Length: 487
Ligand code: LRH
Image 1 (cartoon, rainbow, N blue to C red):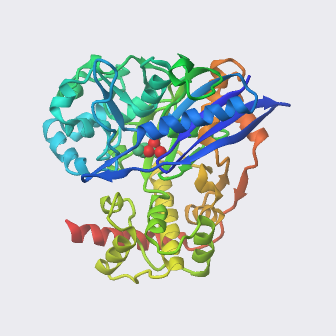
Image 2: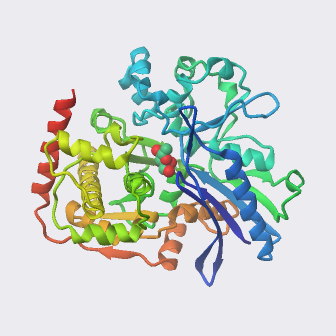
Image 3: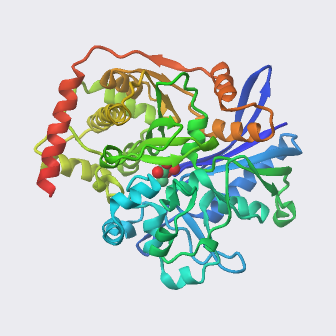
């Protein structure tokens, strides 16, 4: 059997073919495309028709490679949604979570229902773009006329098959699911004037969705595809695809976002978890992704976009390495770095405001970004250990960010933990694995992770002796200083 993963992140998408041969998982990227939001009349939108078209182009490649039968799974970034009318037509274009419309919404909503109560119900971290806040700011007329609200990957699956579902790993990022009842929370739905029936039925990853309606796409030469609802939240797929072993491992899914956390059998909802803004997103097989969102490669992607000369990511690393030492301490998780007009200006202004050396060259900027990301990762691991009372032995870095050997080593040095890097395609692999478990070609998650260990190169980084506590302390002083100044 041949499997196809459609994996679309905020900055790029790909179709990856997978199959098992000689007890090894073999994968091959067969189609890649860029993604990103564009600004129209002051609002940030995704181009969903373009994404659908790229999926079809990729499936056509599958056929051209000689495969007439396959299964397909789709995962994308979380929280964003599509509003559909009675006829299944979109009522508006899909707004990106980077849009500024929800900047103040957490404050508004938590005046109506307290933060503590929302957290107790959902266990979800407070991020301004959670679906609950986006829907709160939604055009009320359009919302009233909405027959169905579909999350982005569910919508893409619906376009291919005509079948609408709400897959739970992604649905949990709405901050509307109740951890106890394991369904939508009525009080939270009321708060945003949404009815339960406006969401399609909830399904677990591994559910068969339906056959691709080839006849709807007659301009493409497509194979016969059975669409399987995988863990449609990309981060959930990435965690499936992380080859952690034993009890004490953490993951860092490193892409546009850095998602750092652990896989837990039970939700962890307490005061400390709320204080550090840790989330309990739902994973496959009823696991919980207890993690924190860290700003990630977005910073470097945005710096790159604003440079006059085109640098690739390997060049950024080379330039960063030439600049030794820690010269700036920046909390990149601050709101101001979510979507500034110009990331370079924003970093430089922050440094001026906090009386720090202003990074000017590409190397200085890259050094400052990688150093601070590594510090923020190290602090997140400390927090994880504090909240869970567990010691983390190993950090598995997966996703495109795992190519960055410099940052991998810095992360090992600053956290004092052994770092394992790879696979870089963990998300697509997790997507494929879920399909393979659904078709019973792979037994379970444990067997899947063994298969991944046997199939991909995983690089080990041992921490160097550096004065990590002093660096982290300095960061905390500067960041706290800045926080005090701005409040
Ligand atoms: C990563 C991701 C992350 C979400 C964000 C919106 O791609 O899905 O898990 O918080 O995008």
